Length: 369
Ligand code: PEP
Ligand code: MN
Image (cartoon, rainbow, N blue to C red):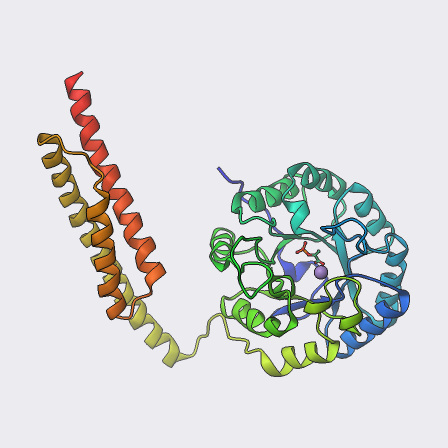
């Protein structure tokens, strides 16, 4: 059973001044004082108030640029003073948290590789206890919603209440144009379970290539997520990490100011309200009909189960099922319904039918005992 989370509203964190969407931007890594300050200045000119830069970098291969470490925190302090930015970085252990607090960092995030490790998350939760530092938790690198929720619970149990999440996509075997599978379904599931949790998307890591950052950012906004964390570097092609996915601050400005469409979550406008309510009422009726149809279908499954039992026939008849599924998909497709949707819907119905028939079989076994 998951914990209820006790959260401080993001409007009380003292970090963001704009909420539709909240934006965090900055380079993947702090590389030099000059690179940090030049990027920070341009990001501030683009109207962004929260600056990111990785100081300790979790890299796949040893020997890659692993971040400049603690000295880079001074550059973030400087960016903060010069351009009035709030500054944030990634933490992966107790020492990082201590150094961030010593340098007045405003917000920290937990990276995807760290969220996947409950020992490290516990260490971070204890280090953050009593600090009041806001924390964003990136999804674990594997598509495991419980692991992600577990990290939120560990922080919350340690008394951390300024918590948000960053959806940055999942590692996958599939070959996609994107670096990480977006897995929006999991994000929506988390959003539905914790509607008050500030929810960011990180289109940069999801994309792996700057050309996909706009479409992924728009998708995140269309799904009603609250914020974007976007990597931006004053000279992206020369970046020491994640060069392909970083935008120049100018491109970032154009994305935010000219390209992205921000939709309202809701409106009180009379015409919209009246129409949406009628449409919702229609959906409610159709959903009730669906329930009724499912109930009748399961009743027939029960009857089939009884019949098979009387004739001593096995429950699972794969060949019949495969033919039926193909037939439904063909018909559904002709009606313009999406094939993966039909496949998962009918698979769920089939699984439940088998469960119902199995129950009938065990009834028999019990009554024989
Ligand atoms: C990052 O934000 O630079 C980073 C390393 O991200 P992730 O943990 O999502 O890979
Ligand atoms: Mn990066």
